[in-house]
Length: 162
Image (cartoon, rainbow, N blue to C red):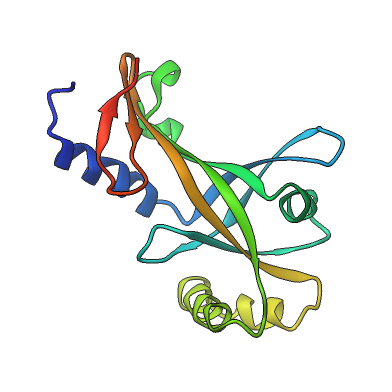
């Protein structure tokens, strides 16, 4: 495995995620065209990422039609010693739009407001915005060359990827 314990690896990838307020978002259009974007997010206790995004954005239309996405959190370039092996965690996610009458909707909008402030008051008033849940189904944590670890989404345990 690595010189780090499973617990230390878990804490390291969690720390990378929580150190960032946005996630990189990879989606695909109905015609199969790839798109990459980003979005501010909040995360719940179960590890689900929530974004509040406009249907004017290509990634929103892609998310609502394809119901799948990949997200990535990556170490900033300024903090890495080797650009070819930046620390990163990626998740393949299923996508669910949260209806405005769902209890989770208000909970997550409140969490977004707490995290990002008054801009959420404006965004909540716009009819083209959707609350989207990105539910990780599989994950990969890369610490550098030869240090890639699959993330078990059920219990958070890790195993070395080959």
